[in-house]
Image (cartoon, rainbow, N blue to C red):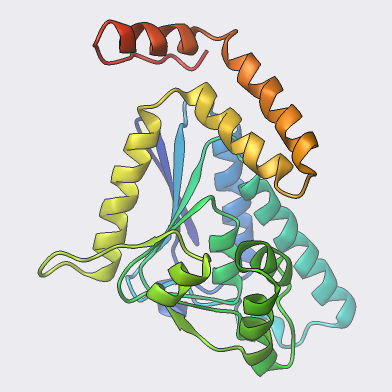
Length: 264
């Protein structure tokens, strides 16, 4: 199986599992990703999702070059369209999605990470869009998601040079959310998964309706005019006050107790 799916309580974990190929993306990985995303889409109990790579050395080191080399132009466009569609579904998931990047996140791996809401980078994580070194360009949304995360100047730098950057530079640019420090004797992958699980558990303990509406407000209005975006925010803010979770959350605060959210 190229992609594993596991659910522990309200947290789902999707693992790209081709460690001998550095978790490179091929058709089987796309099939597995689509199936795992479908599991989340069909399960209203999931409150947070973690995406990671098996083996410790790579999150995803890119697309499988051997599988792509002989593609025709038409086949390559179809492959890109399929990859984009699957990553769009990942980005559109209602619960927040956390990328736990312990090693290489290059090409399609960087694109996969950017389809997630939060990118946690281990101390040995490396990011990049090196496609130009292969005579092609990013095809799974890299040119578009990267510019939206880091701006035009940094996106052009990374895409046109194909250079790899370390976790600290990725955070400084706004590509990754934060660098995770490893404890003594802890690998980069173990450290980033530890913090990813802690982050996911923290999110899962919050009001799930509010978390999903907050994600929706940000994603759907990031490119809108301020007045349009704030109007959408007002509407979603108002919707919160029609939920049990709002009543429970504010009552618990006033009563100095821990809220018990039900997601309704």
